[in-house]
Length: 323
Ligand SMILES: Cc1cc2nc3c(=O)[nH]c(=O)nc-3n(C[C@H](O)[C@H](O)[C@H](O)COP(=O)(O)OP(=O)(O)OC[C@H]3O[C@@H](n4cnc5c(N)ncnc54)[C@H](O)[C@@H]3O)c2cc1C
Image (cartoon, rainbow, N blue to C red; front, side, top):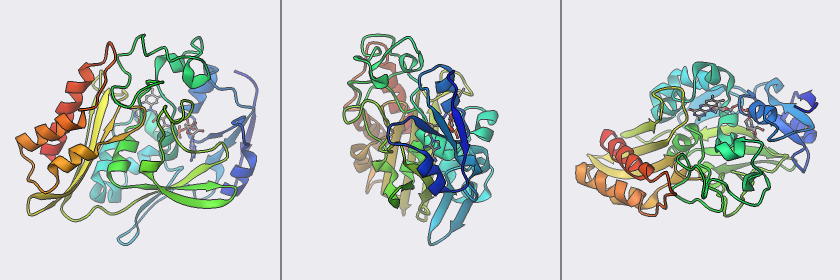
């Protein structure tokens, strides 16, 4: 690992002025992802800007009018053990509790989880100068691609590894982002960018921008949220595929639905066509099956990952029936 400067900052403004325009300085929160990248020399920042020393950056606040507000430096284990999250935002609670291991959840923050980098083994291997690291090609396209994208891939075929992001999108969350000009709030759905738009980054953040807060509106009455995650090992693993669904019912009929897929595309993938199938209907076997078919209608598997299509369909169907 190269030597680097480590800066503790007291305020968001200090953090932003310690960052730069060309990614030589990097944000560190819990460090569970960033330090892995540095040890493997996938990135070699000259400066780390430690956000954990910013006062009042870790909190969970709730009011009926404003919903849930979570400071970006809040650890996943604090969210997991929050009674208000468990009671009113069950989908988020389910997703957070399935991230990695207890140790990871103790260190990892919600901001870091949303911004974590891909787990693609070519990206993580310093000997492969892949497209995402500025190289000329995606080795997964014709290589070992059993964990890669079946939807929205190309020219790079990573999948987004976060469990938390699909749940937040299904809940209609937004993000507060700070930069040298001030702060803005954007819907989380607009945060991620696919490789066709930018093959080097997974989201819209510039190198001197920071997520400061995650906001989640209160789910409507008679809403149910379900997070299902398929893993190769039964525990402590990234999602092979995952489904987050948040459904609101009116007299047993779906009045609104959000279905978001994880582990299948370079970004968490909302499925408006599948949502439209269940809208205005009671969810039974047949509708759930139709929604699952439509959710995967545009899938384009690579050589080794067609199994993800049936797996995802099964999870979508189960999630809908369980809602
Ligand atoms: C063995 C292992 C298993 C894992 N399993 C899972 C899993 O099952 N599910 C899952 O979802 N995740 C999993 N993870 C990923 C883990 O959840 C993330 O590493 C963690 O949440 C990142 O949080 P952090 O605070 O440590 O982030 P850091 O490592 O400090 O940062 C991660 C990235 O986010 C950026 N960043 C951090 N905070 C901010 C901010 N506020 N604004 C802007 N950018 C920011 C950093 O610059 C860096 O690029 C696993 C990781 C490991 C190592």
